[in-house]
Structures are given as structure tokens and as C-alpha cells.
Length: 314
Image 1 (cartoon, rainbow, N blue to C red):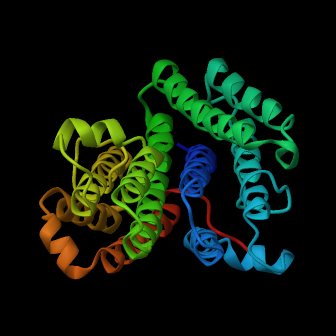
Image 2 (cartoon, rainbow, N blue to C red):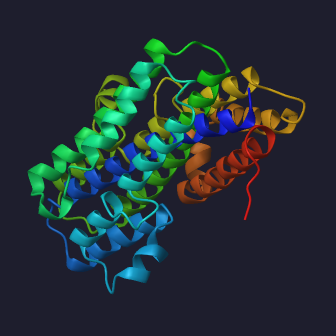
Image 3 (cartoon, helix red, strand yellow):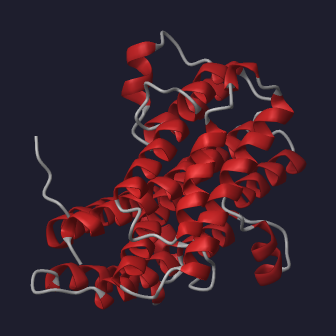
């Protein structure tokens, strides 16, 4: 497959997945804000959220202070923010258009329809219920993208690069969501057990893991089990272990003469998660563990770009 085609497919999938994860982050933040909190806690929540996804500097350049409504607009539909949901879905559509002949007609229509509908939203005039509906719509359109991809695309190299982009982006975003929310909940003042339970359940809902948690543990929600589910459970679709295992399999499928070291590093990371123990992770410190994981995922992303995709210019 041509590097240009692989590049467009890979980034198309990454941008779709990134838009969904932004919607998930905004959704869980809004859920957490339903609980009684001080203004200082609210500001901290949004600052750490922006910092975790690399948007804090961009926000500070155009805003004087952290205001929840302005942060939501900045992350969701700000056309000047290259990291907003709006920008991610626009870039996904541009990449899809560049390789339209490689996509099935159903997949192209799914992406194009998403973009056309997105332009009708005006988040500045959406109420709380409308915001919830918007975030659910973004997640649904991402689900539909993956469903149509699975149902209509051949299992060839094009599909491999689509899936590779999806899982490397998902691994990165799950680690960021878990890092910020886990620390925020753990360090928040203890008001009552119900409030703490709501915060942990909101975190699980943000990665579609609440029902999975109940099925696996059948007990009250505890921080260590939340971490175990989202880091080490290979049967949890959004866990780090599952994402890295899938990523490794697709790297093996598209390997070339330059990718040996990339495959080795990906396999090493996947194996450490597959055979890891949550006790060791927590002893290291979850924040330190996730920080190192994000560094390793970014390294793999850079190596994939070097091995398979278009060279970065400028």
C-alpha cells in the first residue's frame, strides 16, 4: 500500500477516535460537576483536563481564566482550536475524502454525513440536556464508523491501518482519562460515600466500563479494581492491555523491512500489560505508570509514522 494512502487511513481513524474520547471526557466532567464542589475544585478539574490532552496552552492564549462553559466550547466546537471535536471530525472527513476510492461507499457516506450534521450544532446555545445529547451523538457516530468499517471493508492492509490508528489513539486517550480522573477523585475532599461512588461510576461510564465492572467484580467500586479493569484486563475493549494487544497484531500484519524494532517495542509493551499485576502498578504509582505508558505509546506512534506513513515536513 502507498504510504500516502496508509497515512490518510491511519489518521482518519485516529481523528474519529479522538473526537469520541473528547466527548467522553466532557461528558464525565459534566457528570462530576453535578456533585457539590468548590470553585477551586471545578477550576482544577478543567485545568487538569486541558493539560492532560495538551490543550491548556492553547486555551490560555485565548482565554483569561478557566470558565467551564468556555472550556466546553473550546474543546467541543471551537473552529480555531485544532484539537476540538469539530476540528477532529473535519480532519477525519478531509482524510477520508483524500482516499475516497479506497473506502466503501457506505463508509464514506457515514463520515460525510457526520460532518454535515456537525456543522448544524451551535454549542453556545445548547442547554445541559442538549450537551449530553451532543456528546452521545459524537460517541454514536464513532460507533457507527467502526461498525460500518467492520461490516463493509475488506480485511486487507487498508483495514489494518484503520484499526491500527483506532487502537493507538484509544490507548493514549484511555491512559489520559484514567490518569486525570483517578488522581482527581483520589485527592478530592471526602464528603460522603455516595458522592465518591458517583465519581468512580462516572469515570467508568466515561469509558463504557460500568457494566463490565459490575460483571467482573460484582462488588462495590474500589480504586484498585477500577485501575485493574482499565489497565490490565485484556477482555475490556478500552483497556490498555486490550488496545496494545490489538495494535501489536495489526503491526505484525503490515510489517515491512523497517518495522522490526517497532514491532519489538509494541510486543514488549503488550506483554508487560498482559502479564502485569495491579499490585506492582500501584506500588510504582499509577500516575508514574501511566505517564511512562503515554511516552511509550507516543514513541510507537512516531515509529509507525517513520516506518509506514508520510514523512513529517515543515
